[in-house]
Amino acid sequence: MLSNTTFIVPLKIESFDRLRNVIVSSIYLLDNTECNLIIQEVDEQSTFAEKALPQIKDCVGEDKNKRLKHIFEKSTDSVFHRTRILNDMVMMTTTPVVVNYDCDILLPLESYQTCEDWIVSGKYDMVYPYGDGNWQYQIFADDELVSNFINSDYDFSILREKSRIYDAKYGFCQFYSTKKYIEGGLENENFIAYGYEDNERFYRFTKLGYNVGRLDAHVYHMEHARTPNSWFSNPYIEHNKNLYEQLNTFDKDQLLNYYKDQEYLKKQKAKIQ
Image (cartoon, rainbow, N blue to C red):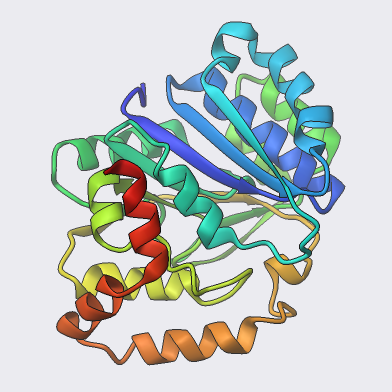
């Protein structure tokens, strides 16, 4: 299951609950699927290697853990350039399907499989594995809850014990044809930290004529503390908003011309030439 898929997870562990979330989501993916998992962590020191990786290895075993690739990038910059980190990982991907994946996300196994099938078959170029509207379970997790979830052989009803239904739209995670993701401009690296990149991505891929699908299914989001890198207190929020509003007025030809001239895209594409 999911042997054609690579999950790419940009990571900066800024709170204890985010550490717990990346442990749980990594264990869930590695234990239940045959996917590849790339985690690129950017920070002053690697919290993932010290505190997460040993627990993941202990839970899933050495063989399954071989499908996890952890990359650590040392940086003292307080701003997390998520779009650039995602693009770095896309260019490392060798499978036909790639998933832009938040470390706090869990999906029912059938959702993952349906999305992979749709991409591999050519039915869609990009898929949102959750509905548009009240399709999010916000999970207010603690150590006991996630331990019970893992020990129950991943019974999602346990997560729903501490949850509420909330809105879902464009974030969380998206499945792509790896080829079409690159062709369509990857992540726009002019969006920095948090805000509006999810909206722009949806507008761009639909406006450019890619086949974008969506599942009527729930996404499970394990809540976490909010920092400027994950909330509207981001110092780049006005810049991101203005950029989105500008790009949102572009027609297909304007978008094509804009992305053709992006230096970040030229640099990323040069890695496969």
